[in-house]
Image (tube, rainbow, N blue to C red; front, side, top):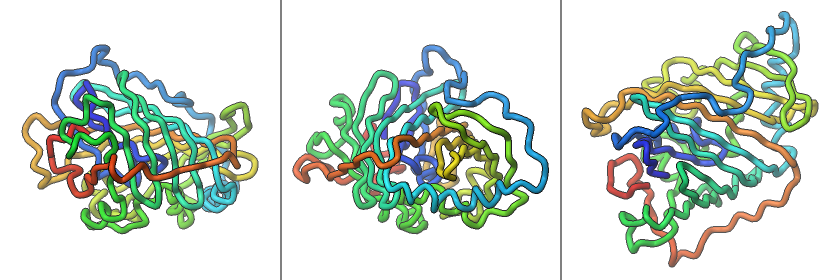
Length: 295
């Protein structure tokens, strides 16, 4: 994770950055950002088109998006996460490639002038921290790793929640009433159909815990191409600080998070490998404990 100048600490974990790893997101209380703004810089955040009439097959398309997307095997991806709390705003941008079936990925992240390489290999997250953020890392090693499977289990969840490729798997059981067609839009020069999905948080992995932080439902917009594949996903959340985390009075009680994720260039090559063990420090279990890792 990147420790940002704005005091917000953002967990950027590839495709499932927010949905799978919401409980890994934490907030600090450092100085505010210079512009102090919360302007929306993510794609297609404008007003949606007029909803389609009842009786369209939008719900069926949404239920099939996971299958249609994973059939493409691999893709290029772009991720933007913007977090706002107590008048401070921070954003993390990422670009990379992903194995849609297995979840392995390689991504370059940037935030407030800092750059970081991130890899997910066999459900283990690796991040190469900027030099000045390594002071709290054992051995001052350049890479840190978090075993997402173990982290999910430690937090009372299940291993599947850690697999980025499962970002849309829960949509298989979505109800017709929870899907609304918003209209036709272009994404990356291609025609897509935009849908708004009302997500029942209780049905997500770790749902009961997430309900305490997110509330009972969460809005999600997805853009599907003519082949039914996911091209863009936008999630807006207001996260309440969980009880019992040891947060002090300076920790924001609520954080607004917007995540926009895009896929393109299906079939692109993906070569995700773990960094050398001698250059890697295992930080599994230390996430969210308030350790002075600056990561």
